[in-house]
Length: 112
Length: 119
Image (cartoon, rainbow over all chains, first blue to last red; front, top):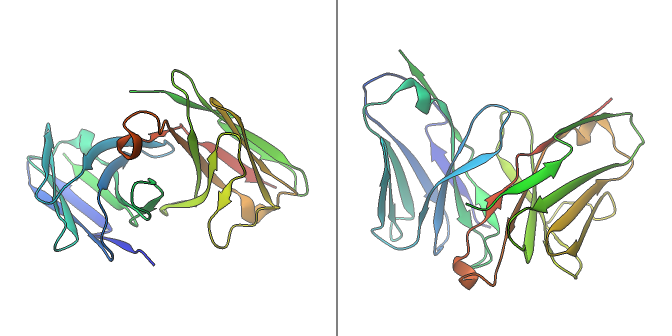
């Protein structure tokens, strides 16, 4: 059974600081996704990582994937209040089927 | 990106009634749609996968007679919660993809979600 674990589950940080969210998964998978969810809203796609060593950046967020370690990271640089949200990673449970298994989510609060 | 809508966005119903939630792909054709549920402050759990014109595939532990899924066209899937009870109260989110676009690499697009409250 595929398990996806995020760390930390809660993160409170100050504006301007850097931090990293970790996503570990238990079996091999060919792609990993990062999503953002605001309270009461659905998911917003942030990144799709397709291969070992993949790195993608958008603004203050950067995601990377190490398939050998079964680890992905979401790095936040110089955080701003607008990045406060819950962040989920997800992994395909069946290759190519996009039947996703989600991590528990990391609730990020950025304080002014 | 492509747009997926859900209707209604929220619904309150009495225990024992049935509720239908619609998921539509507005500007693309969805060969596959997925239904998830999310309890407050928890993660998303995949309930079922529906392919246009065929029966839905349910994940382990999801009652197919309780959660009826129909994917009758390439732009519409419906989830009917039958004989709803308070424990069915949740946030239901659908997503859609078109397998014909880049096959397994085609992106999955999420709807805005439907909040169901059963009294």
